Image (cartoon, rainbow, N blue to C red):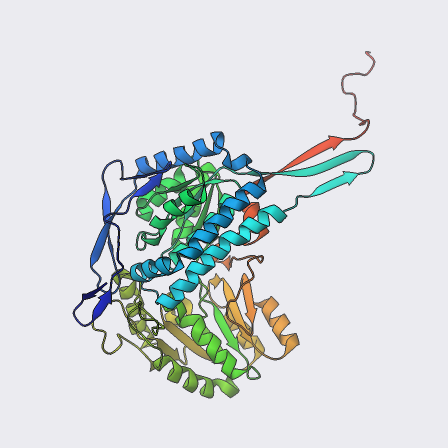
Length: 507
């Protein structure tokens, strides 16, 4: 289906819901008080549906359903193989619907359709990975021969509150749902209010896969209402949050009174360091993809590129030429490489940084709205060069298709530039010097480093940041550790010497 906008035909998916509801205890429901909020698409910026706006009463119902399913239901005590079969069915269903998921995700978030399809397939892989992991998982046993046996008894923690962002929403929801459910927890998911459409598909997917009612609950709504109530709820044992750093600070404070477990993946301003001996063609491909894919709305974007002086001019010239050639347009068009930013509020924020950048660096590509796209949240891929390290566009997370390029002369200067921001999520290093690759990587303040590649990640590895980029790590066994309590059980295998207090002779 297409509709006429001011300038072009816009694709609108068939079968959009008449409204988006919560999913609590196995049923689709409206907010207790009837509250709703409008949801718009980022191409027309027109409201296309109303979603239920969760309040404290709705969170209370969802947490109660999750708590009942945890205390009385089969899910937490199910054998790992049985849970694994259900999670694999979830993956099968997601894979079978990947085209529909991508269509809805692209429409709701502005992601290019080809990239949205990749994210849908990645969501299925997240479930398959954790389905395998819980069957393969082992726990530690320690023994003192003839005296003592000690083992770890792993138990799901309880009700997990999952708060997810609007960038690649379906995939990032799967990133939390899969390990939480694999561990035996029950969950309440609060998806981002900008992009609730694809999250509304989880209810049918889980029901069809055989997840018992109450194990998965979803409450839509604003962060300061539904999200706040979820974080503060005394029956929620842990919070996993992905989003920006200032919100993470607020959640951290609100978790303190109930001493919740927390995992936070926050903002980033990741450096990509290109040394003169690097494979420049590969570095160009990767650094362009690293900041302009997913519309630049990615926490791991290499949005500060540091280039060694001997190749700086060539790199800048070639980078700018490629950036000018990036296809910006209709998210549903398979040729599109950069689509529409998620929401007018975010578009205004990114454009404000573009204006700031014009006084902080030399503009060599982009710098405004692309030609031929007078409406919608479109930003031309924007490249600033010769950017000083104290510039706001060097220091602050923009979260859009905007990059700052800065030269360096020595390895020491490159390291100081790389580490000279408050964030520490990812870093990318391009060099053919093996010794430098390792020593530089280990000296960078970041939770993750990629050498001579963009962020292609093995799901077994830890994902997380340092400094203002996060708290804790997820991925592989670290995710299962987060959603589990590890109880130490100690067994004596022989007589135990105990000091006999009170057994002494009387005076």
